[in-house]
View 1: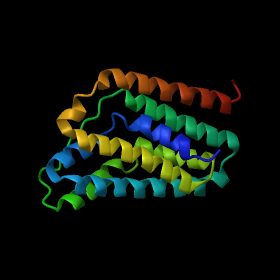
View 2: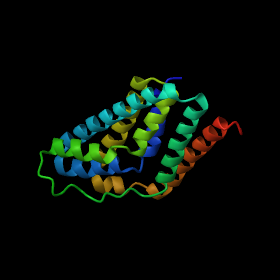
View 3: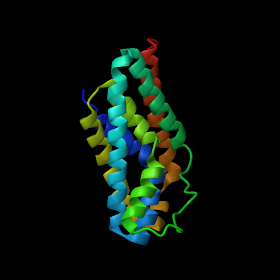
Length: 186
C-alpha cells in the first residue's frame, strides 16, 4: 500500500494541535494569505526532504525494523499530542515581507517536527516518496488553511482539551499495535 492515505491521516491527526497550525493562524492575522501559502510551501519542501530520506534509508532496514521505526514515530507523535502547542516566538520582531516571514518562520518551526518524522517513517516502510509527500501536504493544507481562516482567536477557541487525548490515544494505540507486530508479540 502506498503511503498517501496513511501520511494524510497520520499528519492530520498529529498536526491538529501542533505549532505550525497555530503559527499559521497567528501569521494569517498579521500578514494575510501570503504568509499561509508560503508556510505551506515550506512544509511541503520539508515533507519532500523527509520522504527522500525515508526512501534512502529503506533499503538498509529489515521489514521489522521499518515497522519499529513507524511505531516509534507514531508513539512519539502520540506522546507529544498530549501537550498543548505553545509558540515561544510570535515573530513580531521580524521585519521581512509577510510571505518570507511565513516561509522561514513556519519552515524553521516545522523542521524535524513530528509530522516530518511520520512521513520519514511511512516512506521508509513503503518507499514511495511522492505519495508520502502528497498525503502529508494535503493534510497540512487542510490544517493550516483552517487555522488561517479561523485566525488565532478562533483557532485557540477550539476544544483542544478534548481533542488532544483522543488524537494521542489513536496515535499511541496505532504505534503500540504496529510495534508489537514488528516484535512478533502480536
